[in-house]
Image 1 (cartoon, rainbow, N blue to C red):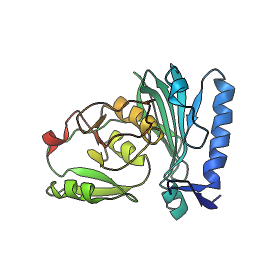
Image 2: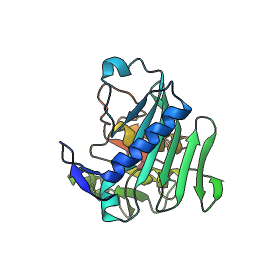
Image 3: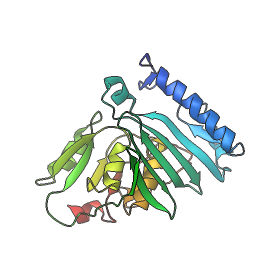
Image 4: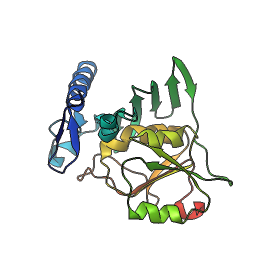
Length: 233
C-alpha cells in the first residue's frame, strides 16, 4: 500500500490512493448512479461539461499522502456533496486515528470517535492565547511572516484536512493556508467547519466555492468565527 510513484507536478501517489479511489467511486456510483464523481485520482472532466453539473460528489480518496507515507496517521478520506458551488454534505474520516467528522447543510457538525457521536462547535477567538494550526509538511515564507505577526500564539502542527477539523471542533481558533490546495482538499472539511459555526474564506473574506474552471483554491483562512485576519491581528 505504501508503494509510491509521483505525479507530473511532483506530488506523491501511493497504491493506497488508487485502491481507496476505486472503492469510493464504486460505492458512490452504487448509491447515486445519477450523480457524477469528481475525484483527485480519476480522470477529470473538463469545465465545459462540469459547469452543467447541478450536484455531484467531490472526493479526495487519501488526503495527506505525505503523512500516510510517514505513517503518522494524520491522513484522511474526504467526501463532499457539492450543489451550486457549495459543499452541502461533508465526511472527513481519519482511519488510523479512528475519528470521523461529518456535517450536512442545516444539520450541524459532528465527530464520531470510539462509537460515540457528539456535536461539535467552532470557537471564535475572544482573547487570550491564539491557537493556530499549521501544516506539518507544507510551510513557507508567507506563513512564517504571518505567524511572526501573532504575538504569543500557540502553534499546533497537523496534517491533511484534519487542520480544518481542529478549528471546527474548537481545538484551534485559526488555520491560515498560504500555499496550493485543490478543491477536493477542502470541500468536505469546509462543510464541517461551516456547520460548526466557523468560516472558510479567501484572504478577501469571500467563502471558498467549488467546481470553478480552475480547481485550484486561492489562499484561504479558516476561523472559528466570522472574524477576518485583520480583526484577529
